[in-house]
Image: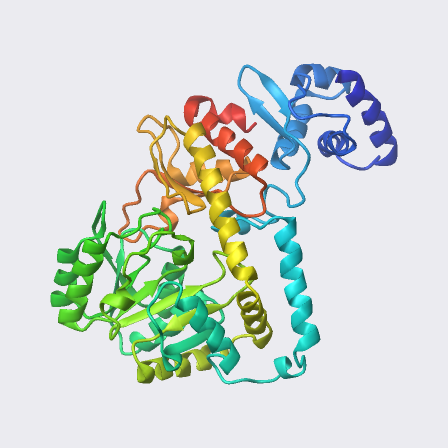
Length: 466
């Protein structure tokens, strides 16, 4: 390995005379991997040997390995040295940006399904009047869009009236519209102690107070919800009842019924965020089924197809309320993209959406089994159909969740601290780990091994990331 590096070093120095030496080290490793000369698990020379070989100081050699590790090219283990990690993935392990590394991205379909997705898009643009898709349209979707939304919604719900359906540009936008509508005269929204971070951002932007409800193993406590209804100006209850982000909890029927009973007695609207409901194989009656006259049911395709497909389907509590939300959303967004709506409708109609959903489900189950094997000594929550897990940090761990998440992202692991989800200013010692995104199953496995190694060696954590 020393000779291979030395030969490449001479070539790179001649070609890139102005490039910093530490970057050249990472470039050499990347080129060696891409050419096949460096194979996964090949051991790299110790830092001191590398520094002597390349006539540089120890600090520069250390920075070179750190840069290679940042790019996801190598892995290091205390006492064992550094090793080639494998071929650089088509999408960098950093996800292209620190932002993507904090998102709960679904698992991407394989090549065969990718071709089917592309074929559906081609069919759409050859069959549809493309100019019609570039014009202004009524908010909430055209008749064809609503018909396909009805098909998708009725996979989880009883028959839905077309007059209660809206097609929106993503669940996040739908939440903005709903909070604008429901809290236009002030008031608060009851939420779990850990929720989707996007809702926190929306509430902050709209100056809406989130009332955190204490939770047990079944979700928000009904007594706490009722207390807020009695003492506060509560305008809505927000729930994410299926494969909750971040805890992976699915609310059992008895807890749904208890919360629905309180909402019904105090006439509190329920915002039911079912971003992950399509992934679940076991149906539990939704709030929309229990109290349809009060529930706003939101679902979409971003978490089972791809985050770039910003299409959400809303089932409102009656025609009039649905029209009121359409007005609020029209003021905020003008309309959902007709092109995006048409693509979603095309993929639903021809069955591609179902095939992608089944693929995500199946691959999630495989990755969860891999995680269960690698992380068996640690405490975490997960569900087979989901592509994230909620990992508890051991009491003896010497990093707080925020530090842990940052360091893991530096190592290529998609991790988010509990503070991002917390609504009661008391974040637990836990982090969310995403198993999805553009990463292959092999890279996901390597990242889980990296995570397990860090968890087993918290006192040596610094040496892992030097």
